[in-house]
Length: 496
Ligand SMILES: [Zn+2]
Image (cartoon, rainbow, N blue to C red; front, side):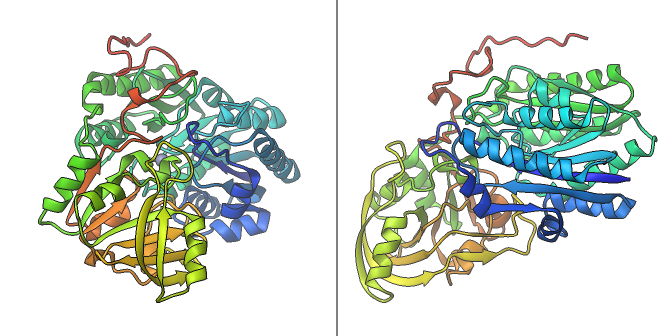
């Protein structure tokens, strides 16, 4: 059995003012064939899991291509078309194949193709014909469209947030494809999309209603005839028609059972919909709570600047509040290449006066004046060996400067945006995060995998920004309507 392995992953925040270009993918990861296998074999990522599953079952990987970029703005049409072309070429060169494994995010948006994942699947399908099995993996934050369901044989999404089961889901996809090619099973899938949004701050699968959703999922996975089932909590920072929660069931040839299973999951979620809304403390109250907490270090999640959700990474709202309230010993990481240059010119051990942060747009505070000593200058490259959200295995935050202020604040200034998925981002700079009083972490759930083990307490700050927790703060043009909680009277009834 020969399979093609494909990957095209991007979480597109359509409210980010800076578009995502080809170079953002090329810089993060873009590999083909042997180089792709070398990049991803053994990685804690669905592509690593797919390779393992193929090798375990004796399926030959005929070739392919895989690319991703850090979550950021809408993908330019030029980049999208070029990447899609290269992906399709890699597939073409792998033919003939018996099946396809494809890793998608599910919330990719290009300037022209708002359902960019559905369009990629449509193009793959039209190249290989109607019957060739295509098994896709998706992020838990996918906005799943009808086109995605129509043009794939089966879809499998991550089941944990933070995403720690990426390898397992990739392997599951490969095993399902193997069973399909062996003639053991004949997958059919059904997609249910109740009109609801699950707020980011309620998406941590370790507690509350989100945890119960995945207990329901575990129950469905035990139903006879169910091959796989998935819940996509959705990504409401992408203004697309299919935005919102989605539920998928894959069964062995039983379309009715697939619908029954997906509808049951959707109905259970719908019944709890009010528990997926939240009202969080604002910056001032969140900083107050962090300063008063005896459980240090406090991890203060900056929800409005959630880099893993595609935000600018340079919000100063919490930094300004920390300074205003005379906090000490906090750590803040900001994307600010201009300030890094000034630190380079000053040199280590020298004093700098900087206006840091808030340079991407006007939605994330204003630049803040700081003065301090340049402690470290670094190449900004780090390696992560542990299982962490994203499965990237490390990162490149560009040339990085660490500035220490008189108030013992540690300000980390990076030349490239980097989501806080790994403590190595700080450890590689010689910083002991566990010695700080308050760690401002620009995320919500994803950083927990790295930060919870050293945190005295995790607090959520309901800051403003393009990853604000409250969907009512966004002006949508393309989303489906109604959607709870934006339309409180939205109705949902299953059609079965
Ligand atoms: Zn995600």
